[in-house]
Length: 224
Image (cartoon, rainbow, N blue to C red; front, side, top):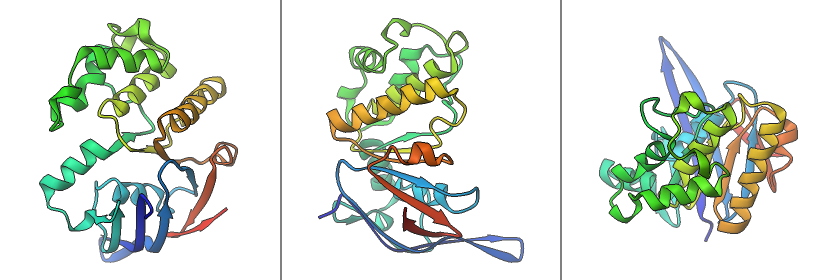
């Protein structure tokens, strides 16, 4: 059984008096531990697809099965549990809370989880150490570089020990050297922790570093 199975997934948005087909009858299987990239121009449907896999938005039709369970049929409470316990989200910007230290930002997911064991300082410090900024646990975002802020965001996404990381342009605002460091970190986490990575990028060069590459265009998807 694939970890994620998408079947005839469609998402239509209504804008004024017109409609936009953001996802057009997509079917896709993703195995546990895959490192997968999705490329495509702006508006091709990449973020919409990622959001449906993550249970952030619901499709117009079709199914997203996670280990056999159709998450689209879950109620809000169960869907929230799925997002918090199975999925780690990373976005183009680190989106750290400026009034919290690096460690406090990493601790945030534990506040909303059903498993209180995750909400502890030691685990946050361990993850910050893992991503290479263990000495910055008490630093505020304004005292961190862009790459360091991104590492805090990665540690935060790992805090609830997700089985899948969904990353939307995770290196989009970084210089080439920091981008390369972050990609190496992603690959190490994928290799050592067997976390499934699905990441969106505009860069074909970055996309080719994934074990499997897909391209989206006008709501459709195909293998590169």
